[in-house]
Length: 282
Image 1 (spheres, helix red, strand yellow):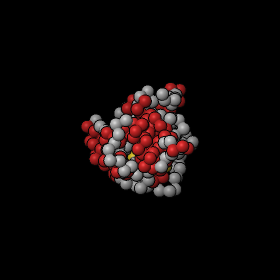
Image 2 (cartoon, rainbow, N blue to C red):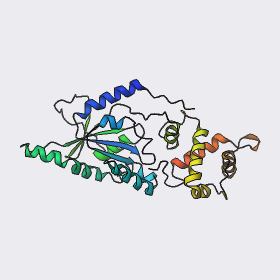
Image 3 (cartoon, helix red, strand yellow):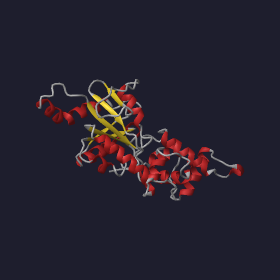
Image 4 (cartoon, rainbow, N blue to C red):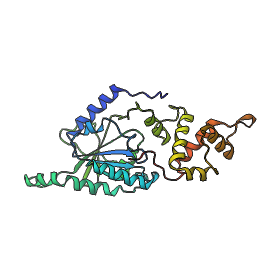
């Protein structure tokens, strides 16, 4: 069974810190992994963000199944939340973030102008995301390499880092570590499959069993092609054996080294050797 801990104390602190920051910002950018948009969310996010405008950024979209990603965008929009597929590594979709933000915040800034505020300030956004979902890459991508601290904004402590994105947007990173909740074992397995949690935390064979069963169900042709399989054995051990034989994952005495098979399969998934994969469907 999973050995991942979920720390309510840490979560309470992170939640408090985010709630304090919400007073300063206009919009929330919630960063999730496009391959597992639900498992890579924090379960308290809706409660924390409450009624602030929000954009869900489906990051690593270049690694996800494009058809499934479109379904996710539509799924979130049905819930009245804007979603945008991006890839912070390559820059795909990143330019649209500022455009969308302007659209969402136009009514608020028009009100400010109507009240006689001649030159409204920059839009302020908070970026929220679980660890390893690509937050710092996105911040660097948005800000250009030079991450600048902006001057003292009244009511903002000096320790907080506001990052300028051109003249129109300022970003605030979340300090708190917002872990997903691992009550559901499958959430942990999905996070492990995509490499969001350290391989040392879980038994790699368990993760590979989960991943192979998923591939056999949803991407059977890719699985056959990658490992030169004529048919996919129903028995998972037989599937490990087949892949091990084809790939030479052998221990002494010619036995199959199951740890090596597990490592190989997970490495192949994470380096897109099986193509673009999504492990959750709306």
